[in-house]
Length: 159
Image 1 (cartoon, rainbow, N blue to C red):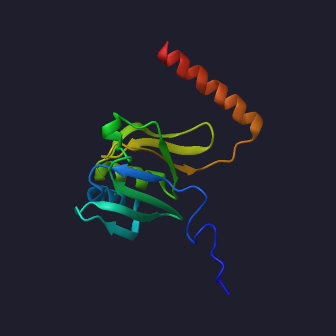
Image 2 (cartoon, helix red, strand yellow):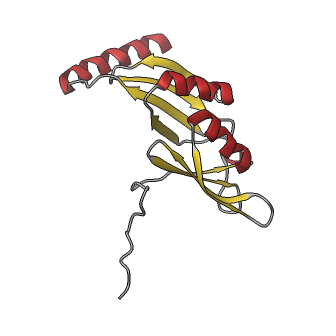
């Protein structure tokens, strides 16, 4: 009798980011230093580059590989339209650790209208990260008021 295999392997969620980078070895080291990632799988290709790696950050898996035909990096594309949103217990510590490890600050840490303390970074490999700690549950009516006020403030700053 065949053993039933789980359709979603243990430790995975339904969605798992897979980042393609220039120099995956350096990227894995950066994610370890910046986000306390734990390397769980590493497959090196015959050229010495990483063909596949899996890192555990918090309760989630992040897959990483070097660029190859059919898998282009943010640098090869001139940037990335994708952002990885990472919830952590202590956003100030993680954000500052990532910055010290070499991430560029795109938006400094701030208490946001939706109830998160939040900041945005770009890692040294061109991937965009939002890092947050949820601080407040905001009721829908209050969220609508706060969002409108935030949008008006942003409009006036850029007008």
